[in-house]
Length: 114
Length: 113
Image (cartoon, rainbow over all chains, first blue to last red; front, side):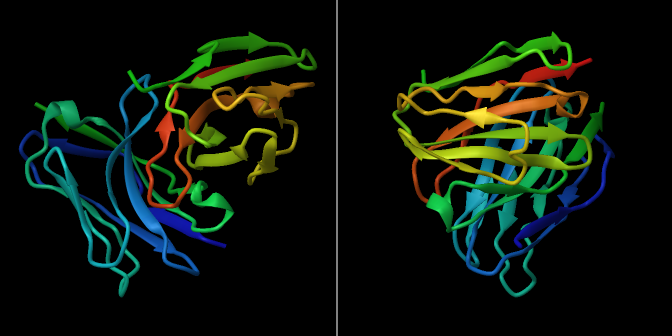
């Protein structure tokens, strides 16, 4: 079945450092890809998405490009802030069953130190 | 404000005591689902519903029930909770179609002793 694998955490960075969180997927069709962020004690919220190959999603300085040839959707940010400390989930959305099911990676915890 | 609400936010209960976690959305979404979040496993879908009176199993449905009598509500029922159902639960809703984002509730942390 479809699956998502993301890099192990926790990741600890200093403020203004460059961030990359790797995400690769396995899917039989052409899924949509998402990054969700979970701040402490809160639910998940969408960070960015891409719905077809070569699309780039971006939001709040974060970017990710849908790479079909490498089945990847790596999350990047040029300069992280303390407020970016959270758990980040990569996910894909299957096109079957109403297109509603999200398959998540295991999550990567990011801690940014001042 | 567009939102998904869940109640209760925290619940401690004992094995075998039936409980219900409520979920409601105000966005007129057709698709709703329940996920559980466990360390190292990400989120896994328990049940989903594509419309009123239409529900189906997700990846981990054992020990859970759901109902969808109204479009806005999608309660999760644990008829005989067990300790392995201790987890963080999220309700979510979205428009139908794989490209649409899901909107998540704030979560319900359940402990079964």
